[in-house]
Length: 362
Image 1 (tube, rainbow, N blue to C red):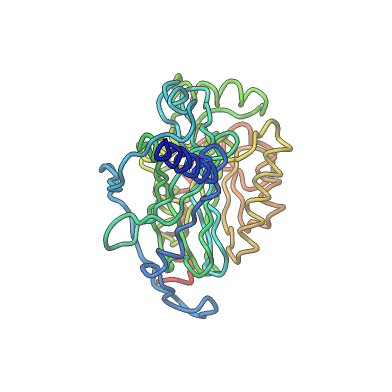
Image 2 (cartoon, helix red, strand yellow):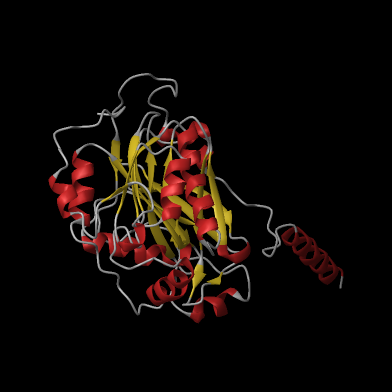
């Protein structure tokens, strides 16, 4: 009887100990950047002046991402049901940042066509380290709506360069990839939208754009056609030395389709930036795009060229002091900027690719 009493006390003690690590509200949310900092040691001081070399630590496109991590049990009883609502439709922000600040990387963990968000489970962030592949940097709990925010401390930001990043859900090993670009101040870039700018789809009425363009894309009912010579225009700008920012008002639910569309159409790699909050009208879109460009300007980056298809995009570019603004398509008539017509063909013919922009990196 005494042995049984000791056993019950031991079980009670263990139960109380496990309660401290309640999986519903766990306190052991981990950031592993400190442990991983040895592989991402700072190559030069953040105040370094002059041109820098960029690393290119990218996963080979089209090949399977292998992280070598085991599958874990779900923390929440409802998670197994949520993941059966449809295929994983996760999203991961591309990031464009300097090395003199902590880096926020935002991801979304959702399932099914209606974006059922997973909550209360862990998600992991990996960064390609150039040598051994993807390295675990942070492990965070997924919050409301399936959003998860990873923070990489300033001292653990990688060398200047372009890195593949991946977000993994240990409960089912689903994952999504993106890119982290770490560039010095003074970097110059071209900013373009997708809808109406790189694609032919009309965006003359913003309200109908949401209903007639975004939703059919999300349901797989429409694949936008690229505008004539749009690929060549981006290629010419890249040859001039510009980085490319694909700045879209689309929501995170369309990130996967947007990334795939850019790749299959042959557009050069760049930073894909999407909206975290719903963009319901032109006023929202103007504030969102001007805000993104304003924050990049505060980091010392310069948007020298912008391509727009609507007056609100031109206004956002003007507010952000984009040096040269070009407009394309019927919706851009009399909307400001230099109007190019319905195609980029003549514009591309007039671009001198030998005039290479001066970037702060080799």
